Image (cartoon, rainbow over all chains, first blue to last red; front, side):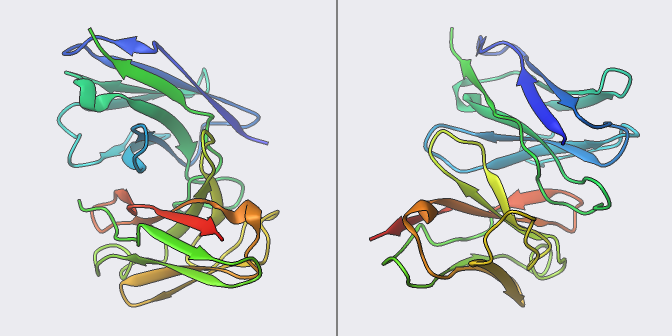
Length: 121
Length: 110
């Protein structure tokens, strides 16, 4: 079955750019939407945005000015960049897919295990 | 976009049924059947419990069911068990082609 794994620096300095990679195994990234979601400690889930295999994207309006997503189907990976980070961007970042098999809707399944990114000098 | 509104907490005794509401607008919950529900235990990634309002993924107990009326979706857990104690989040597709989560509900089994 499809599995997702986030990777990237666990510590980012304020004002710099957070960069994460999600590697997909057990299936092809050449279909469906692929999402990034984050969760600050003790708080709720926040959808950051998603990218389709064609490269088209939709972002959370509250983060849109700072977010860039991209995809590399040859490596079965998709990517998140969040610029000008502040301590408020400290969170566990998850990647997830919205489709699978014959399902082409919008549900998050499966999820990666999540990676903690701390913004601190 | 505003988060969907959920009660902060819901509790019940073992064997009872509880319902968690998820209130949105005609631009999200009310306008699409892409409402899903997630269970999250501490330090774990969320798990899909219900999708497309009332569909259960394989492997999810039939004690979990979903419904929608107007701009409000609901998750019902019947025969409450200790293992159901967790945080629950709803999610919906929106008119802006984005997705939005609910504020989250902590379920306590008394």
